[in-house]
Amino acid sequence: MKKCHQCMEIIVTAKDRQAAEANKNASILLEELDQEKEREEQKKQAAARKRDRKKQKKKKKMQAEKETEVTNKRNKVVSSNMVHVNDDEKENGETGEFAFQSTFTQLFFFYGNNFWKTV
Image (cartoon, rainbow, N blue to C red; front, top):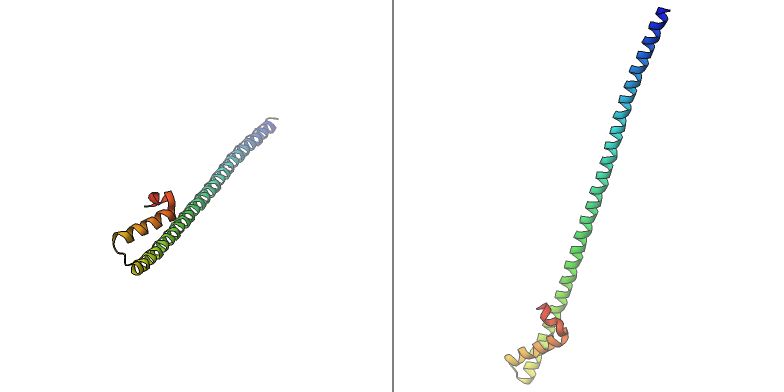
């Protein structure tokens, strides 16, 4: 009877030790899963930030291209107006200030009230 009791205590102790080891391993696995989930979340956030930076860069590039296009368009209009004014000067014999006023008037009517905002 005494030996049976000792064997039972040894078995119970071994089971307790085994359960403690299993709990320890389970908590380690759960912690690793949490860390993995956190790394995935950080990876997703980094990818989202990268996409946002790329979108902003593309948006700035498009805006710069648009501004360049508008500037080129204005320069083209101004240069064509200058050519017309120079042609008018040659035909009418006008020079200097009147030619400038003529160009200014053409530009003002072309751009309207927005002329002063762009200059």
